[in-house]
Amino acid sequence: MAQLRRSGGGVVLLLLLGLLGSIALGWFLSRPQDPESPAARPVVRDGALVDARSGDPWVPQGINWSGFESACAQGWGYSGLDPLGEDAEADQAAVIASWGVDTVRLPLNQDCWLGTRSAPVSDDFVERTPLGYRGAVDRFVRALNAEGLVVVLDLHSRKRIGSAGFGSTAMPDSESLAFWRSVAAQYSASPSVLFDAFSAPHSRDDVRGAPVFELGWRCWSQGGCEVPVEDDRTQTKPGRATYEALGMADLVAAIRRAGAEQPILLSGLDGANDLRAWADSVPDDDQLVAAFHAYDTAACGPACWERVLAPLADRVPVLTTELGAEDPTDGWVADYLRFAQEHDIGSLLWVWAELPADPMALVSDLDGTPTPWGELAREWWSQGLPEAG
Image (cartoon, rainbow, N blue to C red):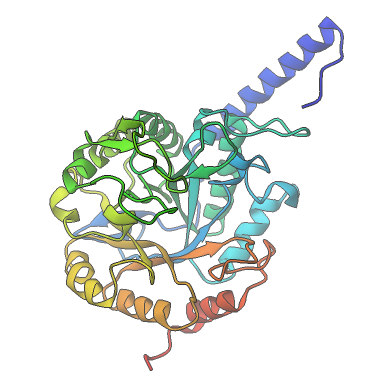
């Protein structure tokens, strides 16, 4: 970061301007949601999601937009929108809406929002702050809502301690409560914004792919178990440090105490792929949605969908917050979407991001140029799924 080489009066002026800028941004973030937003206003009613404006069933179909969970921890921006110009948020929202979707999930980074673990990371040219991160997220949320898109804000990742990496921890910690108190308070008056309390509770690390501790439904619900401090991208070592996990009940309580009444998504065990005891373990709240991650590499496949998801969807709303496959064009994703459609289960595809090496990338750039997978997905949204072969 450039050194200040100014007189004492100049430094005072800069500090004053910075303070005024922070006050202005704080006011901007606290503005109420536009009551005329064309986006749906989802609520849970009689075991299903409906649009509160009409009472009609609402089964979300959309995408995950990647960037806010990683860029701010790695030091290349708040998100991929940073270098795209003044109207980047509105332009991006318009492109996404043109694909015929109605929902966008935004994975967020806990440390970048709170300013913990030296996040967000600055560079030699830009100083990044938690307030700046919140402002970047908020501009995009408002742009998406203005295009008629519901937004799901997802507690997804953390900055790694001592490096510019990022990853997902096994369970929430005490700082997760601070995250949700802040996020929920900011969006309590935004009926087209939903909350995904914790993306993927898990007991594995991606390096070994093996369980490193036992995560059960009691801890998922109420907390209290000891979980490793390492994230899923870091191998957990013998004699590891741990922290006491908080449960989903703690997060739901924090969101409600902040004044937010919108539906809250709760992901199950095994990286959100296990919902077997979800209905028996959730806290007492009438606005909860079961969140599920469907990948062809995960344990819950077609037989499990019929055995676990279908009966659960008859009782509570189920939303597939991440859907993808090693080759998303080979028919597996289409099979899942047909199943989901039959049971009124919403689905959000992974992932809208410029990732040339990732077969699940829907676009080849943030202008919205579709990859072959993106072309297929856009065709499904506009024309419907083909009959099973």
